Length: 85
Image (tube, rainbow, N blue to C red; front, side, top):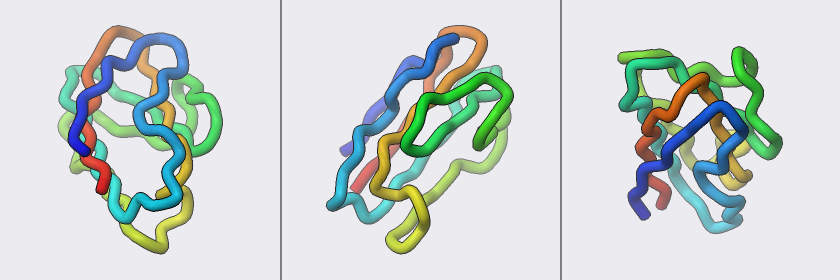
């Protein structure tokens, strides 16, 4: 499944928990840093930082948190693209 989620200044679910997920690719398409949390609410300036222009985050089978819910937050309304298989 391919998608794009608009992330705002409140914790936003990007992908739901899925015990069958084998790969997750997250790309920050915005002009602002986006922060991620695995299995809990995202908090601004905490957790995994997807920086502007950084490489995408790729989680593969065996990586901790791959099958958990992923949430994101930033200080504005920005797009986060994702691919989950």
